[in-house]
Length: 124
Figure 1 (cartoon, rainbow, N blue to C red):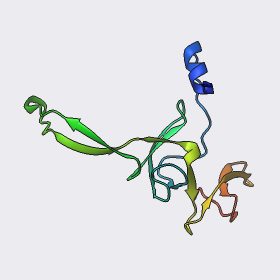
Figure 2: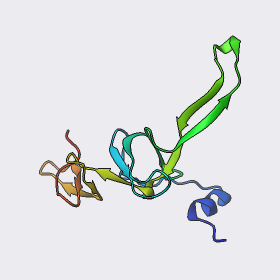
Figure 3: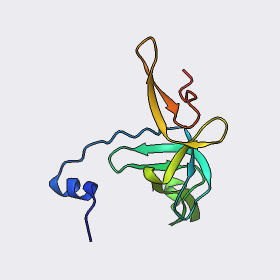
Figure 4: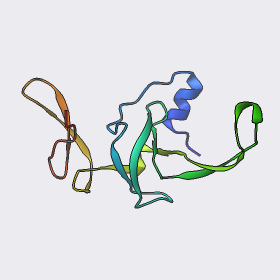
């Protein structure tokens, strides 16, 4: 089985952050995997592993033991697991999944734009 580039870099001891065009608080739609078709807000972006955590997507059950000294109740809790960036697409304000491009503004700032519609994603 072929090793991924991330695993090879990890074995060498060099983990380099990767540029990811999706940011925290973006709304994305899952395009492949067991949660295909679901959409949600991005909670966390990990540039080293190329994975993101999406609200309400890839829910896993976590069994916790009660710990009265830390006020932990115990039981089965559901929480989101990470999903690879290649399995999601950004949603525009109209709800259209799109790839992301960049455009230079007059003041020299780079802004993200939707490739399908051409609309600006960053509203700052």
